[in-house]
Structures are given as C-alpha cells and as structure tokens.
Image 1 (cartoon, helix red, strand yellow):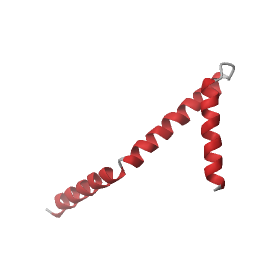
Image 2 (tube, rainbow, N blue to C red; image 1 turned 30 degrees about the vertical axis):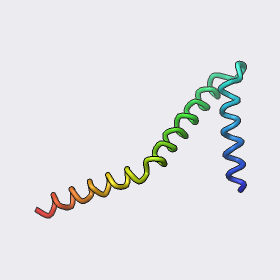
Image 3 (cartoon, rainbow, N blue to C red; image 1 turned 180 degrees about the vertical axis):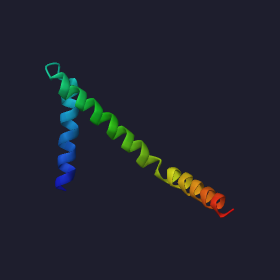
Length: 68
C-alpha cells in the first residue's frame, strides 16, 4: 500500500512540475523523461501477451535453426 501511495505522489508531482511555469528546466526534463518511460512501460504491459507469443515463436525458430 505504501508503494502505491508513493507512486501516486510521484505521478502527481511529475504532472505538477510539467504544468508549473516556475519549475527549473532540469526538473522539467526529468519529469518528461519519467512520463515517457511510464507510458512505454504501460505499452509493454498492455501488449505483454503478444510480446510473449512473438518471443516464443522466435525462440522456436532459433532452436530449429540450430538443430540442423
């Protein structure tokens, strides 16, 4: 529960840093990087089953190639 609250506070802080006009540029860049990384992790999590299936197919192809 603690980590959920901490993650929520970080996410709200990131949005506040992006919106605030007086925030230092270095913090604003870190906030954008954090936001983009979290979006990327979300995309990977949503497509997890398809990624897993693709990896299984590639593994099977490599195994069949090395058996020759």
